[in-house]
Amino acid sequence: MDTTPLRDAYRALLDAAATVADSGDPSPVPPTGEWNADRILAHIAIVGAGAVTAVSCVATGAIATYDNRLAHDPWTLDRVFTLAGGNTGIRERIRIQGEALCALSGPTLSEAELDTPMPTVLVSHDAALVDGPVPLRDLLAGLAAVELPGHTRQLLALLPARAGTEGGA
Image 1 (cartoon, one colour):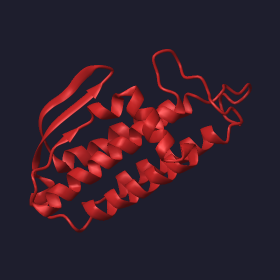
Image 2 (cartoon, rainbow, N blue to C red):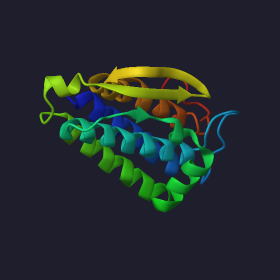
Image 3 (cartoon, rainbow, N blue to C red):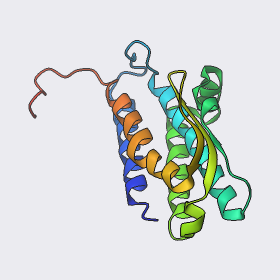
Image 4 (spheres, rainbow, N blue to C red):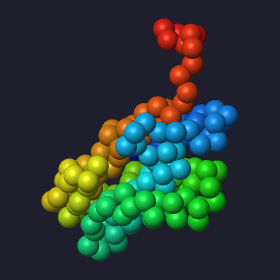
Protein backbone atom coordinates (compact mmCIF):
# COMPACT_ATOMS: atom_id res chain seq x y z
CA MET A 1 0.00 0.00 0.00
CA ASP A 2 1.29 3.42 -0.90
CA THR A 3 1.31 5.31 2.40
CA THR A 4 2.34 8.66 0.87
CA PRO A 5 -1.16 10.19 1.25
CA LEU A 6 -1.30 9.09 4.90
CA ARG A 7 2.20 10.39 5.60
CA ASP A 8 1.36 13.71 3.90
CA ALA A 9 -1.89 14.05 5.86
CA TYR A 10 -0.08 13.50 9.16
CA ARG A 11 2.59 16.03 8.18
CA ALA A 12 -0.04 18.67 7.27
CA LEU A 13 -1.92 18.07 10.52
CA LEU A 14 1.24 18.38 12.60
CA ASP A 15 2.27 21.54 10.73
CA ALA A 16 -1.16 23.05 11.47
CA ALA A 17 -0.91 22.03 15.13
CA ALA A 18 2.52 23.68 15.40
CA THR A 19 1.20 26.84 13.71
CA VAL A 20 -1.65 27.06 16.21
CA ALA A 21 0.70 26.35 19.14
CA ASP A 22 3.12 29.05 17.93
CA SER A 23 0.38 31.61 17.21
CA GLY A 24 0.85 33.39 20.52
CA ASP A 25 -2.63 32.51 21.73
CA PRO A 26 -2.15 29.77 24.35
CA SER A 27 -5.74 28.57 24.09
CA PRO A 28 -7.55 29.77 20.94
CA VAL A 29 -11.31 29.70 21.38
CA PRO A 30 -12.99 27.33 18.95
CA PRO A 31 -16.15 28.19 17.01
CA THR A 32 -19.36 27.23 18.79
CA GLY A 33 -19.79 23.47 18.96
CA GLU A 34 -16.18 22.73 17.97
CA TRP A 35 -13.22 21.46 20.01
CA ASN A 36 -10.21 23.44 21.12
CA ALA A 37 -6.75 22.45 19.85
CA ASP A 38 -6.06 20.26 22.89
CA ARG A 39 -9.13 18.12 22.28
CA ILE A 40 -8.59 17.94 18.52
CA LEU A 41 -5.07 16.62 19.10
CA ALA A 42 -6.18 14.17 21.80
CA HIS A 43 -8.90 12.93 19.44
CA ILE A 44 -6.32 12.33 16.70
CA ALA A 45 -4.04 10.52 19.17
CA ILE A 46 -6.87 8.17 20.17
CA VAL A 47 -7.89 7.63 16.54
CA GLY A 48 -4.26 6.91 15.66
CA ALA A 49 -3.86 4.44 18.50
CA GLY A 50 -7.02 2.64 17.36
CA ALA A 51 -5.73 2.48 13.79
CA VAL A 52 -2.35 1.12 14.92
CA THR A 53 -4.21 -1.51 16.95
CA ALA A 54 -6.38 -2.48 13.98
CA VAL A 55 -3.37 -2.80 11.66
CA SER A 56 -1.49 -4.82 14.29
CA CYS A 57 -4.44 -7.17 14.78
CA VAL A 58 -4.76 -7.78 11.05
CA ALA A 59 -1.01 -8.37 10.76
CA THR A 60 -1.13 -11.01 13.51
CA GLY A 61 -4.27 -12.73 12.24
CA ALA A 62 -6.29 -11.60 15.27
CA ILE A 63 -9.84 -10.36 15.00
CA ALA A 64 -9.65 -6.65 14.19
CA THR A 65 -12.28 -4.04 14.98
CA TYR A 66 -12.34 -0.26 14.88
CA ASP A 67 -14.54 1.97 17.02
CA ASN A 68 -13.92 5.70 17.40
CA ARG A 69 -16.57 6.45 20.04
CA LEU A 70 -14.03 6.76 22.86
CA ALA A 71 -12.22 9.42 20.81
CA HIS A 72 -15.26 11.68 21.34
CA ASP A 73 -15.52 11.44 25.13
CA PRO A 74 -14.55 14.81 26.72
CA TRP A 75 -13.09 13.29 29.90
CA THR A 76 -10.99 10.82 27.91
CA LEU A 77 -9.79 13.54 25.52
CA ASP A 78 -8.65 15.73 28.42
CA ARG A 79 -6.98 12.81 30.18
CA VAL A 80 -5.09 11.65 27.09
CA PHE A 81 -3.90 15.21 26.43
CA THR A 82 -2.65 15.59 30.00
CA LEU A 83 -1.01 12.15 30.18
CA ALA A 84 0.79 12.79 26.88
CA GLY A 85 2.47 15.84 28.39
CA GLY A 86 0.40 18.66 26.94
CA ASN A 87 0.67 20.13 23.47
CA THR A 88 4.28 19.18 22.75
CA GLY A 89 3.82 15.65 24.05
CA ILE A 90 0.59 14.98 22.18
CA ARG A 91 2.08 16.25 18.92
CA GLU A 92 5.04 13.91 19.38
CA ARG A 93 2.70 11.02 20.11
CA ILE A 94 0.73 11.75 16.93
CA ARG A 95 3.96 12.00 14.90
CA ILE A 96 5.14 8.61 16.15
CA GLN A 97 1.72 7.02 15.58
CA GLY A 98 1.72 8.34 12.00
CA GLU A 99 5.16 6.89 11.39
CA ALA A 100 4.09 3.57 12.91
CA LEU A 101 0.92 3.40 10.79
CA CYS A 102 2.87 4.09 7.63
CA ALA A 103 5.57 1.56 8.52
CA LEU A 104 3.05 -1.14 9.45
CA SER A 105 0.68 -0.49 6.54
CA GLY A 106 3.17 -0.02 3.74
CA PRO A 107 4.99 -2.97 2.27
CA THR A 108 4.42 -5.24 5.27
CA LEU A 109 0.74 -6.00 4.66
CA SER A 110 -0.48 -8.18 1.81
CA GLU A 111 -3.37 -7.18 -0.43
CA ALA A 112 -5.52 -9.80 1.34
CA GLU A 113 -4.69 -8.27 4.73
CA LEU A 114 -5.50 -4.77 3.48
CA ASP A 115 -8.85 -6.10 2.21
CA THR A 116 -9.71 -7.61 5.62
CA PRO A 117 -13.19 -6.40 6.61
CA MET A 118 -13.41 -5.15 10.21
CA PRO A 119 -16.52 -4.45 12.25
CA THR A 120 -16.35 -0.65 12.38
CA VAL A 121 -18.21 2.09 14.24
CA LEU A 122 -17.46 5.66 13.21
CA VAL A 123 -19.33 8.52 14.83
CA SER A 124 -19.15 12.28 14.40
CA HIS A 125 -21.22 14.87 16.25
CA ASP A 126 -23.25 12.10 17.94
CA ALA A 127 -24.29 10.57 14.63
CA ALA A 128 -23.19 7.19 13.30
CA LEU A 129 -21.41 7.58 9.97
CA VAL A 130 -20.48 3.90 9.68
CA ASP A 131 -21.76 0.88 11.57
CA GLY A 132 -20.65 -2.19 9.68
CA PRO A 133 -17.68 -3.91 8.08
CA VAL A 134 -14.97 -1.75 6.51
CA PRO A 135 -11.82 -3.11 4.86
CA LEU A 136 -8.61 -2.07 6.61
CA ARG A 137 -7.48 -0.40 3.36
CA ASP A 138 -10.55 1.86 3.42
CA LEU A 139 -10.04 2.77 7.06
CA LEU A 140 -6.49 3.92 6.30
CA ALA A 141 -7.58 5.75 3.15
CA GLY A 142 -10.29 7.51 5.16
CA LEU A 143 -7.73 8.68 7.69
CA ALA A 144 -5.60 10.11 4.89
CA ALA A 145 -8.38 11.67 2.80
CA VAL A 146 -11.04 12.70 5.33
CA GLU A 147 -10.19 12.44 9.03
CA LEU A 148 -6.76 14.06 9.16
CA PRO A 149 -7.46 16.80 6.57
CA GLY A 150 -10.74 17.64 8.33
CA HIS A 151 -8.99 18.10 11.65
CA THR A 152 -6.19 20.03 9.95
CA ARG A 153 -8.81 22.53 8.72
CA GLN A 154 -10.39 22.54 12.18
CA LEU A 155 -7.03 23.45 13.76
CA LEU A 156 -6.33 26.19 11.22
CA ALA A 157 -9.79 27.67 11.87
CA LEU A 158 -8.59 28.40 15.41
CA LEU A 159 -6.04 30.92 14.15
CA PRO A 160 -7.03 34.56 14.49
CA ALA A 161 -8.01 36.25 11.26
CA ARG A 162 -5.16 38.35 9.98
CA ALA A 163 -6.06 41.68 8.46
CA GLY A 164 -4.75 42.07 4.95
CA THR A 165 -3.97 38.40 4.36
CA GLU A 166 -6.94 37.72 2.12
CA GLY A 167 -5.83 37.26 -1.46
CA GLY A 168 -2.21 36.52 -0.58
CA ALA A 169 0.50 38.05 1.48
